[in-house]
Length: 134
Image (cartoon, rainbow, N blue to C red; front, top):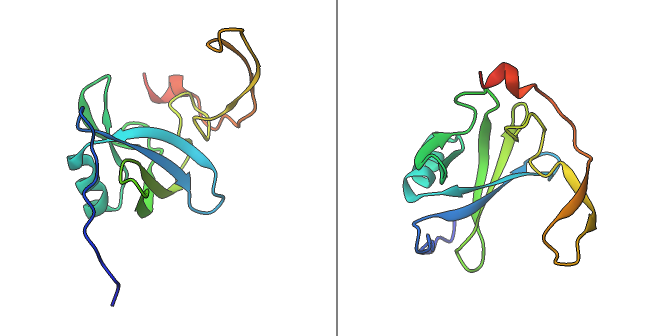
């Protein structure tokens, strides 16, 4: 039997906790999104990644519109209980821009204030968002 213990997840003042999605096979970091208690419960209950959209102020299931779903292999919580890791099997691209990962740009240069970056696209584009999000 597993050695279980209770952990209170810190959903912060806004009721959300950041969640990093990582590819179960390659270890590639695919995206970062936010999770409400309801999104976490649905993720654990269904095995499909659910998040909370801060801009739309609503719960969403990854891939419900695009078909680029995330099957959750494991949900991990960090040592401070204020960040989650979704270990997923990604079907298609994780990024709404059509790229495999949201982290598809590398910083080449940064301005003196450290706020504006010149970037190079390094990641693979796997679908056309204009075809998916009409």
